[in-house]
Image (cartoon, rainbow, N blue to C red; front, side, top):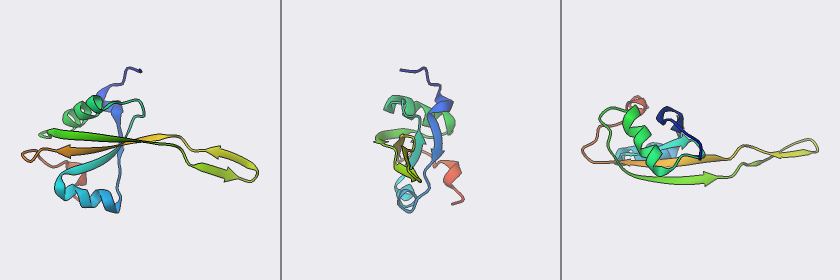
Length: 99
């Protein structure tokens, strides 16, 4: 396993209709490093956002999609998605505040 620092774990937030609906229940979705585990994701969220306490983390490994350009067939890169639940006494994550 690669030595991944906490600031390399979270790549970007996932902004979809379904993920925005989960924010009222303190459930946030992020694209994360493909080799990061649940413990590393939990530590990264708590270190990057002040006052946030993580209750639970679920992860999904997603294979790349097949793409075609003319006769050449390839695949996009595989990704990993993490759903993070916060505790009830936790603060909200600020990057989602204006959405």
